[in-house]
Image (cartoon, rainbow, N blue to C red):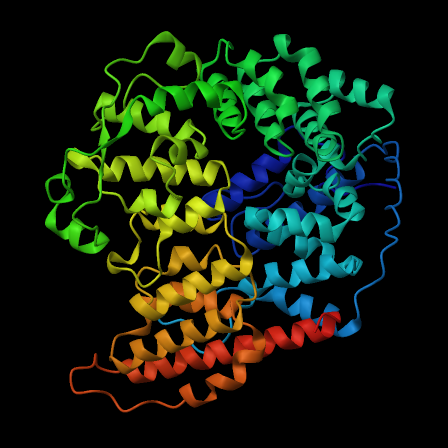
Length: 558
């Protein structure tokens, strides 16, 4: 068969690039191959591009077919109930809308409910629908706080998918061993092999898992390779000993006090000071006792400011605590974890003093200060403006040693002036002290705090309370929000607390909020339009609570 002159018999070097150039320049300036200038040139260019496209595709040599991926593993867990599966799809499909100048609107924020939904689904041991796995992994990719719950819920098939998509590779890093099951505690050969040959993340996961089941075995595993580990790895491994910390760990931690890394030494000292019976705690007690004593020669009025004297209401005959901070940081103190160099803006002596007191067992002070109880000790005046430094160190010690009695003394009554009690120096300290108390007591204290002081400083304190909030705590929050509304302030001043309420109020409280949905009459000095904003915010709160109740019912957790 004879080909026409317009056909091309063989590939021309750079033919495709030439066609692209002609298209960019235009057929008026450059005509395509086999055509002259004129109205037919554009058609000829498209014909030539089509011909070259077919040639390029037909010219590909067949390759060996790729190996089929292995089938996804089975997930033995029961599937989600249909209603819960539909709810999950809605939660994953939600995307935040555009900002409206600080207004959140009346619609619930579904993405903020996803963590709670995941926690409930994981508690029931459900498996996700396979088609939901990509959306789950995308959600976890965008929000690191979701990853633990998502990976637990997604199960083994999420790891199978992650190996096929680079965007989900974080799943392999987040899961211990990229999804490989950790060896059984009795399988010593596999434990040793993984510890010797595994990646760092796998070794951390192994050590943490072993520590939770067999604390002594985990410590012995770490001790066997301690001398050959890198400093940053030693620090991470040492941190895993916090779980199940006991006096049996003291010999190993005492050896770590001589580590060549300052951070490792500091962490070992912190762990030892959390063991009130340790030798380090005893050494710190001796040092701290030398700095603190009762001084019967000073009166409370001379030892503190008039405001402090009024707030503590100390009797005129009460003794005073005298403080003499250390004048140097000797090598023994440094070996026991005292950091010699003070941060910018801190005096060296007060810096050393605070570290000694926070590392000393709290039982030291009753013996040192006349057999007084923690509450009586905290109420004593402190000479020469040392009160804030001493009480702050006691706060840190109470948190480190999980001492509820000292925490109660330092917190004081929730209705106390200055909203903090005699020993709390900041909201962050108060939140940490509350963490040492039981769930019910914690909620009761925060409810009393809100009733006395409102919500302006309550956000951090609410964050340490168990979810859902207890009835008294939930009512205290709603009452305070209602008071703020009646005062005419804008609701976004309390947006953080309102967001917590949406996630943490007991859904059964929704019925009590119906009366707050109407737009109230605005006081004379109220911010313009505040009433409408409040009605919108309460409408979103009620809708969210009812949605949470429906979610729980769908999952069978109501």
